[in-house]
Amino acid sequence: FELLTNKQVETEDGEYIALSWFGKSMRSGELLFHDGQDLGYRAILLLYTGPQIGVIVLVNHTDADCNEIANLLIRSIRF
Image (tube, rainbow, N blue to C red):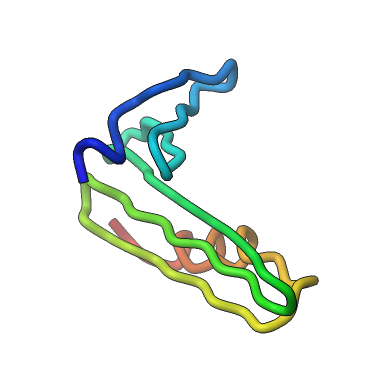
């Protein structure tokens, strides 16, 4: 897991890219995420290392906004 999440490239907006994962430093710890899609399906996985919370969104419609759904779920969790 450490090998996959070590920072490889830093972006201008404070995020970073690791092997297979994207990340961002947050007040509560690191946010690691990976998303993808295939014909008719979309998915996103978010891991918050500080509070040790994970959110997975799987949808069976390519027009669904997984990021917005994940953000709504995260905002509803108190940590």
